[in-house]
Image: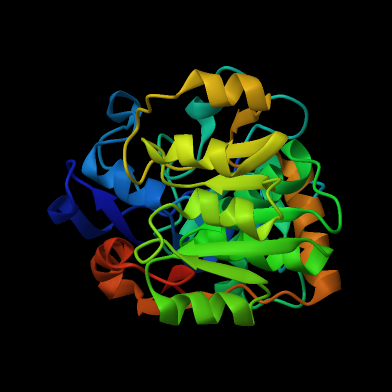
Length: 336
């Protein structure tokens, strides 16, 4: 089969090769991949920034994939040949709290990912695709949409009428805006691009803040909520931005720390955190049960994931480059 492999760290070492097509063993399914979508994590893995000590040589990257089951191994009961499925990034996290070894069984590193014609999965590490979505749309759900869902509902306990602030217009933030607004929450979106903020309004954002023209966006968010602060912030920036996320949040509110676009480290001012009794939660996607709940919600509410660009398989390196150019929504690579 055709596949892209990381011969070494660095995008220049992402090469298309012909490799053996895997065969499903007991409890495994072989998926003919139709599409994959890229996450910030995928580029971080390729560049060697994300747990490089765990990444095997000639890794097939990319965590999120959608396709059709082409073969099943002995003992498979959850899926049949012809079923449409999505990959589950944290392949062994099915429910409950994560295990300490969660990172040893994640797709796209250290386990082979979906940037290939076929993907081998444990039957427990897949979720049925909502019939309302194409495979390109479905490929955007496993990390970005699930991360947003897990932050908002599983960890945040979102209720209708509450206020959510999302940062930027990447995959997680766009998905969060769609999910929260469909649920009946009020969404405040931030960006430095007025055009993108207008598009966020079209997706359901009630209020928008341009953080370039309004540098103290946290104070602006507090003002928009009558001086109380938002119920939840989805922080995808990390670094010093975390202090502003805490400032924007109401007393006993929730800050979901999701990304590290600015920095993997943060110096946190403790007094606002303590006096506000703010809940700060690290989010690394979610378990399969939440993924299945997300898929059902997407189907019931007719949510269509937002795709920035679709690239041909041979142009996968260009898709990785697009990650750093300010995409609106998700970047997809069409495989099959």
